[in-house]
Amino acid sequence: MNATSLKSRIQKHLPGWITPLAKSVWSNVATLSCFASDYGSFRRFYGKPSRRDRDVDRANLIKTYHVIEKGLSLQTPRPNFGRDVRERLFVYLTTYIHRWGHDQTTRIALNVLESYCQFSEACGFPMEVERDRMEQLQMHGDAAHGCEIAGGTVDLTSESAQRDGTTDFLRMAQARHSLRNFQDKAIDPALIRRAVEIATHAPSACNRQAWHVYAFSDPAKKQAIMQAQGGSRGFGESAATLLVVASDLRCFSGPNERHQAWVDGSLFSMSLLYALQYLGLGTCPLNCAFYPWEEEKFRKLTGIPRYEPLIMVIAIGHMPRQFKVTVSTRRSVDEVLVLDTPIETAQTFPSVRKT
Ligand SMILES: Cc1cc2nc3c(=O)[nH]c(=O)nc-3n(C[C@H](O)[C@H](O)[C@H](O)COP(=O)(O)O)c2cc1C
Image (cartoon, rainbow, N blue to C red):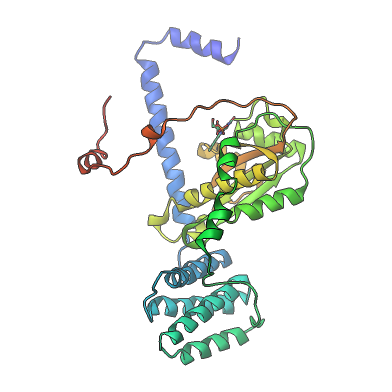
């Protein structure tokens, strides 16, 4: 006798109210367990200022210089704007360079400060003190002179932005489908690298880019991951590679940012799906909807650390010559778009609407 028929036999002999009650208890316990696990991860890992960690320091640095970049990109930046941010940037930059030395991030930060100085000087504010401090920071460790990595702003035209941004997007968006049938052919790792490089153009909160992509092509590993993920039965084995997108919780600095890792990670994932499609590969996003104990198992298999929330798995492979995809009908625009929400409607949103 299998487990399902045993279950239905037992259920037959129980009073009718037991099953709904048991389901309700289980649902509450599981929900609490999921929230407790998320709370624990967040408390443990979010980017506390006291944490001495390169990734956290880098995220703070980027977040801070990005405020200045944003200020400089305004139509008419306020002369001498953001003095407190500038000071904070000097503090973070000094700490970072002393702890970790120069790298791409410190060079970009210095370039942003350079752009800021040029702007302020053009507005008539002397920047000698700031330039001295920058000079000293540049001299510390590996010099950052002559760096080609940009920071600050770039000038574009609407013509180039529109041309580059719209050429093929409509057709691409309409042509993307989840593929559940792949060619038996390995993927050149250079193609995956290229896709990830394209996806890194995704936006992220204060440009912190906390995402990571883990790629698995070994058949035994893939098999184990698919089993743990559970949503690719019947087609997962044909995928040449499984990608797992994760996002570093430590790059986010307080409870108000508790969802940011998922938001940024999802935006990145969507870009990655398009990038893979653009490069001619088929993709199928797969959920990471785990209970804490399932998640633990998945982490053991993949080696992804606890401080990186799992955003999604993406099964990828070359497309067969012919294949079927689901229609996956979309809701109408009228159901999705709420234009100029009337105030009365907005006020009723918090209450649960009974249908
Ligand atoms: C976060 C996420 C999780 C998904 N999980 C699965 C999954 O576990 N198994 C699967 O076959 N498809 C999965 N999908 C694919 C969806 O079923 C698919 O995107 C949807 O039906 C729309 O179809 P389309 O992607 O072909 O446009 C997932 C998609 C997303 C965005």
